Amino acid sequence: MKKNTSIVCSHGIMGKSGKLDVFIGFATASCLSGYSFADILHEETGQGYQRTYNKRHSLNFKKYISLPGASTPPLIFNLRRDLSSFWSIESHEKNLSVLRLQSGVKPLAQVDCQHRLGELCDSEVALPFMSFIGLDIRQEMAMFNVINGKAKGLSSSLTDFHESRLVDDLICQAPHLYIARKLNEDIDSPWYQMIRYGGENTSGLMRRTSLRMMQKAVKELLSKISRYGLNDSNCNYDLIANYWSAIKAIFPVEWNDHRHHLLTKGVGLYSLMQILADCVFETSGKASYSEVFFIGRFERLRVKVDWTSKGEFASANGRKGANEVYLAIKEKLVQ
Image 1 (cartoon, rainbow, N blue to C red):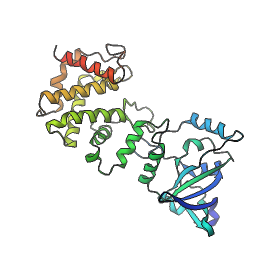
Image 2: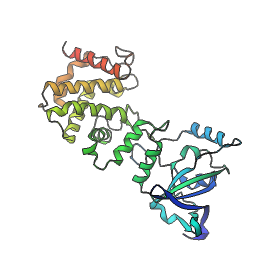
Image 3: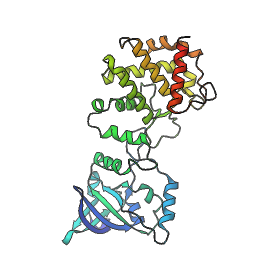
């Protein structure tokens, strides 16, 4: 790094946090804001991992930190390994060190501070910070999850998404997450780009349900059908995708107009997954389970079920409501 293109971000010390090397220092909020970034999850690309920015949250912190006597725990960053040519740490005696950053580049990933820094780009308030040194993106995401997993405002779907990226063998260790994500990411899936991960959506796309709800519904289904030897995750994905393709074909208006119908909301998701489990039970896990098979089996529901938000299921809420919807649909199937 050329000295004439760099700044001294902070004087500080090198040490250990657990078994990992860290730099601890102090800098102004404007400096830390100007040389750092939040790696927000973009749902359409799957890049990033953090929650979307909440301006109100940041403004509340800005108001607080401006008060007399206000303080904050150290902000936590990671000096990105893939940006190592843009930062350096000079070591001196007694662990004293200097962190240098190249002008015009943001090599500090905000692991735990995006909302504290969000509205402080022009603030000269002094802040303590700690930065991990060169964690790869997977390690950084795992650290974020440990620190923020129980944080208010961090959606359960986002932590589920983190888990799905951190598991070494997702298809074997967490087949419910594998199937739930594939339903959202497979272009041939009826649920393609309809499941919320908790990140930043592209404007205009309308998410129907969350990853947390989908993976829970899939997990419960897999538990019920495993007794019939249906344990292959890819085969089970095909079964579930074909079933929902049939539901989409039977209720096309209700599927596409999610704002005024409950079909793709929680009560529809959970109740219809229970209907699928019943279907597997009734056929002993030995049917073809194609889309055509499911359409033939459930076509009669087209004129029997009112999915409108002001219809027969309007008062159904939560899992109890979903079970009531399931029982109602089950009764309609034998009428």
